Amino acid sequence: MLTNEQIEIRDLARDFSQGEIAPHVEHWDAEAALPAALFDSLSELGFMGMLIPERYGGLDLDVGSFLVVIEELARADAASALAVSIQNGPVAGAILTHGTEEQRGAWLPRLASGEILGAFALSEEGAGSDAGAVVTSATRDGDHWVLDGNKKWVTNGRRAGLALIFARTGEAGRLGCFLVPTDVDGYAVTGRSTTMGLRASETVDVELRAVRLPANALLGEEGRGLAVALDALTLGRAGIAAQAIGIGAASLDHSVRYAGEREQFGRPLSAFGAIQAKLAEMAARVSAARAAVREVGARLQRVREGADDEGVGAEALVARVAGAKLVASEAAMFASDEAVQIFGGYGYMRDYPVEKLMRDAKGTEIYEGTSEIMRVVIAREIQRAGAAG
Ligand SMILES: Cc1cc2nc3c(=O)[nH]c(=O)nc-3n(C[C@H](O)[C@H](O)[C@H](O)COP(=O)(O)OP(=O)(O)OC[C@H]3O[C@@H](n4cnc5c(N)ncnc54)[C@H](O)[C@@H]3O)c2cc1C
Image 1 (cartoon, rainbow, N blue to C red):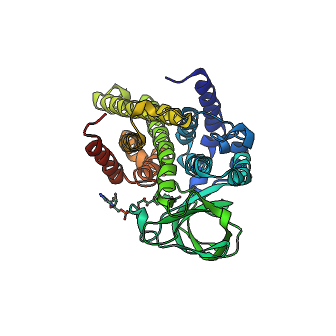
Image 2: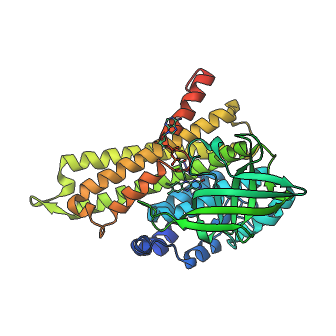
Image 3: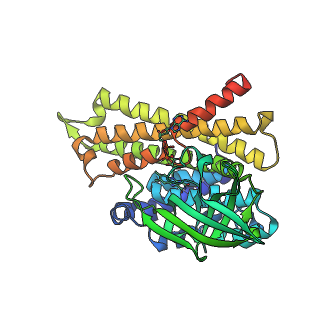
């Protein structure tokens, strides 16, 4: 159940998404770009700093409200939702949790106002699911750090003004998380991938060549970067789960409308039992997954407020978020696949909206931890705790 405040913010996000995003999505997807004006509008609404406290210029919303905004944005366009989710989740979330007062003061107001967009750069050519295999290096040079290496598939790409770069500070697996202004010498975007879905989202490769940073660019403790990454990804995965719910909900919206309009054999598709069964299962899976996402949103908020999540512990919460991402992304994939089927041949065509939903849904099963890794995380926790909880 949403609170009155959450309903208000959902309605604001819905009006904006359906009025200002939905009409342009086909064009943005074809052009493979989100316009600057979109980011200006998102900034004006405060959506670039939803969880950031008011003293840094943010909206200071609860996690549930953040997730409901991401869901509504994704119901119109998953690429827009991804940009906003990364900004608020892994980027601002990591600075809020692990930053010194100086780091928070330096970066959070700029993120909250939308002056800069944030990126989270963990993956490398040889380090995907195995984040500990990162080889980008951070070497101490007096009071400075010097970063060298290459990052892969960095979302928010060329537009980002700040990148959280994870680099090895010592032996394998000992990482540091660095706050890197993207205009620093030696930071370069070297390429952009052509993606199956989320075409308007910029997924880029980044090269770091002797990038020299002051000591205070290190976020959190030296050697604890993996913990910072996993912590940031907990909030991030909740955001991706909400994004997936939005894609699933959009699949259902389009399918219900189309099934009511399209006639075959002298009747609307919605009169056929086979189509009704599809709609029912899409609705059931999406709403069950939404309940899981809302539950982890409430738990994450309790933890943020200093409570201990009913004593279940940090690992259990990580596993619950993994469960929400798993079921939400698989619900989105199922619902978008069924939407294409309900549209028949038209569903396969670029002129209709549902093939994009299917392309976008696939990404949610991969980024910020694949479905297989979500299962690994859940299984590990069940085995540790000795119960499903
Ligand atoms: C559109 C898009 C945007 C992205 N944006 C970012 C970003 O902003 N920042 C960033 O750092 N990264 C980003 N990524 C990278 C993403 O996080 C990785 O693709 C993802 O973590 C998987 O890593 P990989 O692609 O190297 O696959 P691999 O780790 O090589 O996995 C390949 C397959 O093996 C499976 N597998 C691997 N290990 C195991 C295991 N232990 N048990 C069972 N199965 C396993 C995987 O589930 C997968 O099916 C993005 C990716 C995409 C597609």
